[in-house]
Length: 366
Image 1 (cartoon, rainbow, N blue to C red):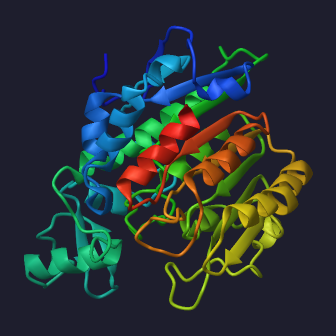
Image 2: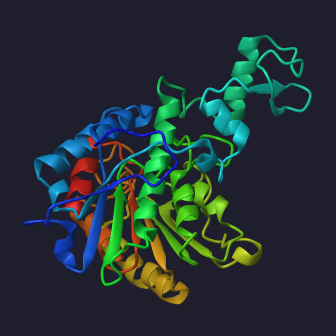
Image 3: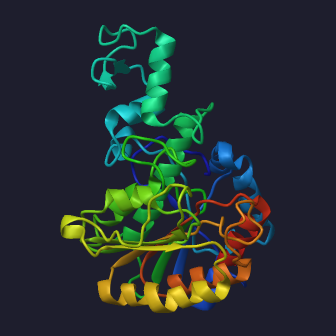
């Protein structure tokens, strides 16, 4: 129990004792909570270069308050298979991240091709091929390669997929709302074939695709300081997934997208909502956004499931120093969204004051 198993099958769900006190269920007794956790998974999540060691702080704080015991189930983390990863991502991109010896660079076409690294497709030295592949797939600057990257992306994605399957399980008690939490997921910037913004693969997109196997309409709500561009791009043409991102927006501010005028494309027009905000967002303003934008959008769309990204980089003490949200204020909005009552997949995201991030996510669970 607790080992990461390299299997595409549904990860095991371990029943827990009924919570004695202080769980997320205190807001609604008619709720079943599944929490993704194992010591091995925490160690892999700790490897993320932008947040070295954060996962351990989060899980240690949660365990110190005995909150995992207050959940109905532990969702055992597992590795996503290549087939699961390529349900959205480009196969050559995934092969490169998994360190498979079947990707090279075509200097004539400026793109990757299948084949040996020594393929005649390229006359470049191997080190130049690797450099160009790193540039092509975004493994540079804010997304450097690191030892264990292959296992990291498989674990993050596989665990979010497992959380989605917890929500779609036919064994679910229909009288209770199900909530699944993966604090170490939420990598919303990754593109179909490119790493971006500390995000190597887009576990959120993979989780939504899994939810769509049962739920016709899914609403994605992103509370991270930065625009959820990767998720928006994946579903920009869909009228079955409504994406709503509340984020900082200004010239030169990463990722540079998220203009409030963009509302989707084709059949997906009016199924994308962007709230691009200036610096200084506080608790009162966020609560007004919940009341005047998020809730009305939920009511109009009537989703069957919700995915909620809970980035903590909008907190007042985050080193980005852009927003002025309190831990209690942001957690209250997160819990109110969970209280919408639909099956809800909750993931983490940004947050660079590690202690405040741990406090926020612990408070949400507790």
